[in-house]
Structure formats: C-alpha cells, structure tokens
Amino acid sequence: MNTDNCRFCENNLSQIFLDLGTTPLSNSFLHKSDLNNDEPFFPLQVYVCEKCYLFQLKQFKTPNEIFSNYAYFSSYSSSWLKHAENYVNMIVDRFAFNQNSLVVELASNDGYLLQYFNKKNIPVLGIEPAENIAKIAIENNINTTVDFFSENLAYNLKNNGKQADLIIANNVLAHVPELNDFVEGIKILLKNNGIATIEFPHLLNLIKENQFDTIYHEHFSYFSLFTVMNIFSSHDLEIFDVEEILTHGGSLRLYIKHKKNNIFSITDNVKIVLDKERLNWMILIHINYFQIRFIYLNKN
Image 1: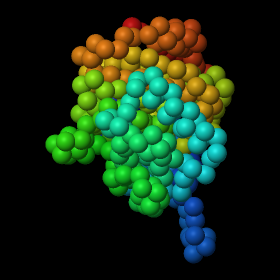
Image 2: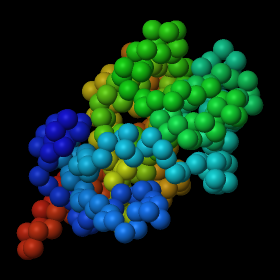
Image 3: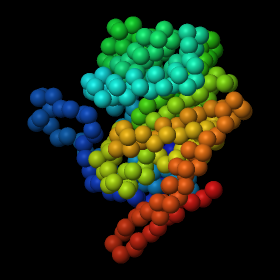
C-alpha cells in the first residue's frame, strides 16, 4: 500500500483535515538508557480522502513495531470491564448464542471480554498480536492465538474447521493499516448466518466535540457510518443495525452480516445515524491561509 494513497479506495491523498505537527509515537515509553538519545518524532496529520471520505493518517510505523509488545491492558479499567460484561449479556440474550456457538474476538487483549463468554460455557477464540498481553489471557484459560488478524489467518482458521457465529472487534478497526485485508478476513471467518459487531469512536463526535486527543499514530483511520458502510459493502458485508454508545467520547456499535444473509433485516437505526451525519456534515475540511474548502458528505 502506497502511504500517499487512501487505505480503502487507493485514491491519492492531498487534503489535510488537521495538522497537529510532529509528535513521538504514543505508548512508546522510554527506558532510562534512552534519555540521552534523540527521540524520533513523526508528522501527525489527518488526511481526508476526497473520493470515499475516509479520514486517515499516513503510516510511519508497522503494526509489528507498535503492537507486538503493548502497554495497554483492558482489564485495568473497571468501567470497561462492566461495558464488556453488559455487552455479553445483551448479545447472548438477543441472538441466543450457546455452547454450540463459536465467538471470536479480534484484538482480544488480556481476555477482558471473552472471560464473560467463558462463564456462560460458550466456546471462544481470542486473536491478539501482543504476546505479553495474550500471555495473561492464556494463563486465565482463554483460548488465544498470538497473531495479527488478516485474510490469510482467516483462511487458515476456516480450513481448520473454525468459523465464527459471532466476531467481535472493539476499538481495533482504527488500528488497522491494511483495512481491506482485515475486512475481507472478517468475511471469510464469519459463518453464513453469523454476525459481527464492531465498535469504534464516531468521527462525528470527534469533530463536533473537538476531540483532538483521540488522534495519534496508533489510530490510522477515523470512521463515519457513511464511509464504513461503503467499506464493508465492498466486501459483500452489510450493516443491519447500529447503536450510539457512550464509550470513548461517543462511539458506534455496528451489527454486520453477509449480504446474502436474509435472517436479519436492516433496522431504522441505520437511517437515523446516517441522517444525523448528513445533517451535521457540512464540515470544515481544510483551512490553508485564506482558502476555506468545504466537503459535503451527503452522497448516496
């Protein structure tokens, strides 16, 4: 992938939405032995693709460099644990997952969420690239594969008889530079009648509330429902429901199925959120001295 091109549609990136100068990588904590050395700084500029309206950073470090030994453990947050437990109770009640189901979480961290499926005796598989974090999950008897999720990994799991009734991806989509590879992997791993739920901070709230502190090098992309629907649709996946939730300054939770799956109907919630975006989406995209340019995200 050319880092000068959109990571979804490969259109050339030229429009800067926000320039925060140069900063060190987040979560790249220094050792005492590093204090006399120069710390590397990288540009922190959010571009907007003029074709698909994906807001994104250019890539300066690979996921291996950022996530292989990671500092963030989800279980350290009691409020996040409660969010996870509430989600598990809701999703099991709504879709009747049971001991014959397989739940797969992408970027499962230390097992903060899958533990609640374990307590209900529902089989789980976590996929977590950070070995230091996955080790904690494994020690707590949560089945975990230490790897980055990808199309190739999805094929390997499918060829070994593992497909998911439920795929969960909480706050990981923004961390993925190879976006199409990741989404295609979800398509491959998901059973014909399975569902996926994905949570991410809503771009609309980032702009309306000036949430600039959610922009950092680990977050490669920033999503509206409008854009993410097009991303999943291009991989024959369909968003059939969406919820606005309070986490991370205001997030969306998407419910996703194969397009050919007719079990689940598209709810009114999808149109409600899209209409809210269209109403608010006369946004200032780029200020360059005295030139002001507006992009209207109201395409169908």
